[in-house]
Length: 580
Image (tube, rainbow, N blue to C red; front, side, top):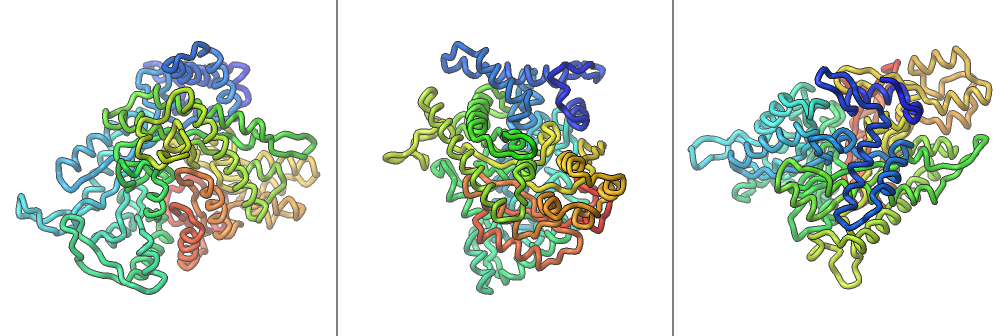
């Protein structure tokens, strides 16, 4: 299909991803929609949400939405781009489903998972209510098979269903640290073959962290009868979590007490799980739709000198909140219970991408006090203006229906449209479309390959680096060859030290800075922050242990680590396995 003029700003990789996953196809599988037409389809569909509130000028809203989408200044989560204005009309990215301790509940959840995956969503579960392995099942006098065995059932069901014809399903499995089967759960992905459609995380409470710090005991409690089954040394369990995370990247850790302290609707229940990437804690049957502002385009300047365009950022945030609130009404949800929760709490998750690109343009190293300070300043601004936009929507459209009894429902409390407003998502394919760095991650490498969509390899090289290298006269065939081979920037000949400092990449950054940056964004985010603490291959288990404990002390809601080379088929690779 010939490109329209407004499609030409898209990169080759963006066009590849859009054609494979997002653009409309005919019955023969041929693409029948350009990227510009996709943005128009989405803008037109989501703008119709205004009609529910008596707005006559829907065309103006459509143009506002189309502008930020087609200029790549804001993008919603993948299901919205794929499905808005099409028969499926399932627009939410993530869901959490409840699992109670009965076969009926378990297999109801399997069925509901299949329906959600087919519609393009990902799912999270807590398996903490299931009785432990070998516990007595009174109705049959048999023995329970335990949470991990049922996780394999969900994994198999996910494998059998290709989401909406576009992507493989993703799950999050959570187990409380005091569940009797916790050691089996921690090791559930130890062979890098089982549970490939799951990320797994241990839900730890503050009592457990205190026991780790003071060499105390951990009581394992049967969720069926609340009896203590046995006790373990808390440090032994923590060390096992650390070891498996070092070996395989799983499990992650979520700080469940911290998450529930920020639960805006505790009168509706306790949060026990998150979406597959961990950034969205959700109640049972609760969905969320996410969107991200491209910070790389929130700058102004010339001749290599840039500053943040705060007015443009504020305007884009307001548009993003309006867009995401409309998505809630325009979406068609796979289950009635999900529809009720979506419209009852009206949670949205506005976040950012392109942060590393912004820092490079501002000449600020990622792993610096100024870098962390800039991250916090940006997110505080997004949080404040996002909530202001939600307040204005509440004045026009009313507060979210479950507002009475919520944490906002107090004398002098803020009247908001959305129970949550901000989330930092990983923005995997969205950042490819926008041709920017993903989420709040640093550059992975100056040159690397993304393995996406199951069988597509997308080569990437830092355009900012090539631009500066050309301007300052150190771009050469030797430098290009070394970059492509995966040579770290610190070992490149002829590159000025100040350039090396600004173009620091993920494995050059000490884990402490990764964690501190995540914490800086978390301080001004309603939900949670997706951030992978990447470790080079030679990192030790002690490095991982320190990162986990620092994450707790810094106030994040969860942490995921990944030591390069610890898992086959990783998404990002560069030429030299010594470095990445």
